[in-house]
Image (cartoon, rainbow, N blue to C red; front, side, top):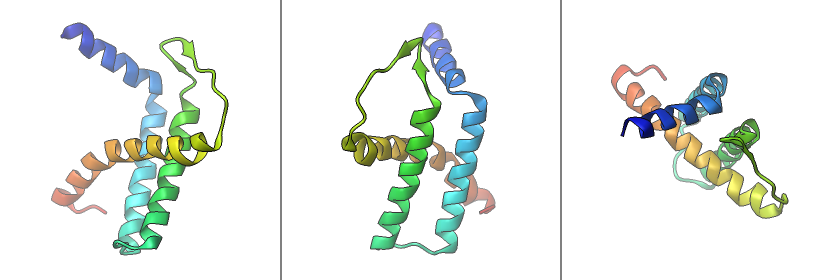
Length: 110
């Protein structure tokens, strides 16, 4: 159990502290703008969050070059650009947005 915990901490450190800070700031910005625009369930909201997830996915994918010393070799395709990268962005947004929204619920800072 202890080894698993330290492996998880090493993975977090591998992403880089500056990348974590900038991801949190990006997510705060996206949530703040969506609250100011009062986005509801509409086509504009879907486009807004798709573009936000595309940007976050691009940021996450291109800031991690190696995973545990292994480089990935792949051919860039349209599926990467329009499907895989936004899915990575959605996972990134959900990971950072849940604690931010919980803190916003109690402290109302956004």
